[in-house]
Image 1 (cartoon, rainbow, N blue to C red):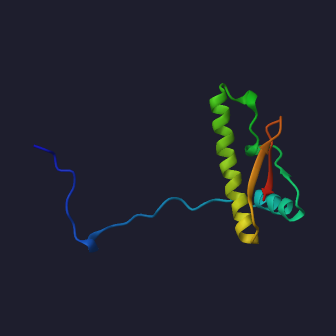
Image 2: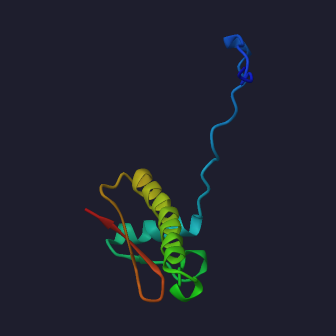
Length: 107
């Protein structure tokens, strides 16, 4: 015989928890991206948690995963600037040889 998995309850007895976390933003990163976008230039992010240096990772997979995670964080900030400032386009991220991301507004 199958073990019971749950129970049937009334609709008004449902308890709904909060959905996900509230996004956190780095004000300095927002300001840098906004300044670059307004000037039509590229924001090169120097140092800190946004730099991904190949020598710091034991495998290419871990390095690539770190770049993807940092890239996603930067894109989140860039899309916020795009939305708040009513800009058209999407963020483009390129990495220099020293592991610094370079963010620009594409098309």
